[in-house]
Image (cartoon, rainbow, N blue to C red; front, side, top):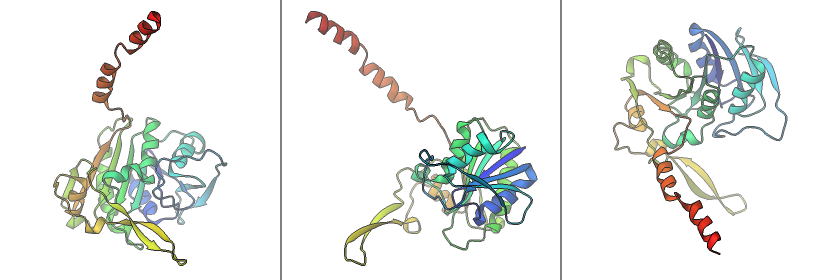
Length: 266
């Protein structure tokens, strides 16, 4: 199995090394990541400047790796269309420093990289770690990641599968299990906080309120992760609201005919 690894924290982040090590027992690992941190950049791609991919020494390992001066989505596109000799069998993005829960799916470069893989009909997985500590020890959760991958790869994932996985920052012995959960879309994690700059002008900074949030829905991704579970949320590419599409079609039935009738009478 050929495995493409990417992230949004940059080619030399600790999380991507742990992810690559966790995946090596399952196949050939190739790493293509941004040359610098590109967190919260969502699904942006580079349109008006050239993209370069430079081969790098990946933590003194034998893993082939490239640094790309673009976004996470750029990295996946470049890997599939330009860099790799064969289309990967799976794309895995992460391990991100900090969880990706609820509304985060719309902002996260980690998740967007996985979505880009699925757009090429490649099963894709995003993996995040529930800690914001700058010097977090990703090696603690490598056994967790390995066990999750072992189960997932023993089953056939659909070509458009996108899985959003969050790992608690716990040792294997402390984890309660794995929970398939929905996104808690009603949770407002980030809010603007006003402050004065050195010149006295009011400006705003996004504050992450994750540690202060209270969750009532015991089946949500937020609650289960905090409760010590690995959370897995399957996402889908097609965002079309089928029920609303049907309603709108009914609203506009006969509109063209009515307009034609009016113009004829004129």
